[in-house]
Image (cartoon, rainbow, N blue to C red; front, side, top):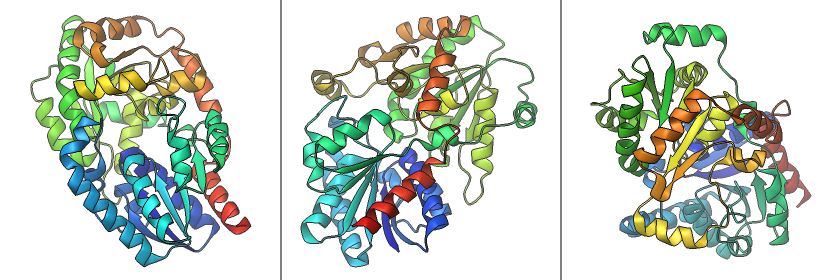
Length: 385
């Protein structure tokens, strides 16, 4: 079976790698496409680095419009040349769905999109437009299936790989603390995003916030995991932060050392300040109480605020149907709002642990691995067709 995959950012790379493992366990598969280091580790040779696609906001994309348009055409042509049995696009809808649209217009290649667009949050008409290019959707969240089916697409809830991911052992956590000379000090994990633009925007805000927190908690240690492609940028941003920050790579070439180091770091963390996104689920899996903070350029924020239909951006809040995780988004993504919230969480995590456990159960913890479930769904629908 020939499979063409496209992932546009780190979270999509993780999903893609898990799916590839599942597909390889069920069939003889030949992969091609676009992906990051984790997908490359599973046998994909990427057409170009996925960092080129990791953009945020509406206004932020405009300067890259012509370059992205060229990459869309280049990727679509690669799909047409490869003639795969199935094209699987993973998240990054502004890029992926444009590729799928070109492919669908010119061929009958089956198209699958992994990660349903958040039509329940904003731009609900996207589902109808998406149906013109996508045959089958793999949903991470259980409540997304009816939205996709109502738009005319096949849809399967497959859960999230974070829910079944391996957590660090007590020994690994102890070794991590010794290796980085943390000892018994409390640890605040700081996660200002995995994209270049996110780090540039959120890094200074997070930095000022943790400086104020450290002025009160002098024994606090900071741990900052980041993809290897962002190490230099993050080191520069954190060069004047107090607390002797521990900056680690969350991936490490062809080995799994980076992933083990990241898991140990999450296990060692007492609290976290994080950007909105999949990382909130990773923190929930490790049961790390958190504060979420996020912002985009002011014009993007103004546009999005007119369109958004929900009162929270945090996946743990949405899946658990609580509002246990505090947020400082948009205009409130400033140290004067973040610091009090973070100190509140450090004093008492409230209902966060219960919400985290409910989230993991609803996303498939203790069930079959989500990558394998996604692979079964792809193959089963393809065979039925």
